[in-house]
Length: 239
Ligand SMILES: [Zn+2]
Image (cartoon, rainbow, N blue to C red):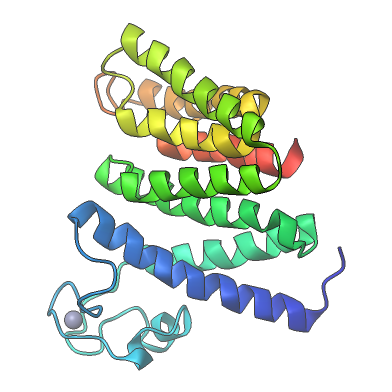
């Protein structure tokens, strides 16, 4: 759909605000910290940050990427996640035209962004993200009279990855199984198979050159979450 500049700026602003909340999740969930308390502080000097230090994107630019109190660099991942969330929002709006019935796709994309970053950094996929999304997906499908679609999708995702994890016990974690089950709830059994196929393909295309270069070793644990997220992104946008 056509979006005027005002709408684009509003959507982008909303996206980067949500991105800054995703940053809180990405930082705190793997540390088993509360996501509401205490207020954000600098990880170096532990000085509590005020609202002026926490404006998405702008604070980072105004502070030139350094803490106001100790001058140590702020993790560049923060503005990058905010930007990604901003662009995700615009892409969603262009693709699905601000339709409330398509809002779940945006929520799912935000969730996948957080899950991917956490999996890349901490090598875990927190239940605190997969479970609420899964329950939300089931409730939404039920409200649309498509509960069977969601249940068969979720079951397909869980069973396929469970079977793979039985064959290769070290390759797959429970987090991956729950993630694919959650994706199946939203995307259905066909969508989840496409997601797994596209995610694995992306994984091979990215990891094989790294393996050849010796950048990673065969035995290194590889987070599968981000690849499943890429597969799901393609399915959401193009299938
Ligand atoms: Zn500091």
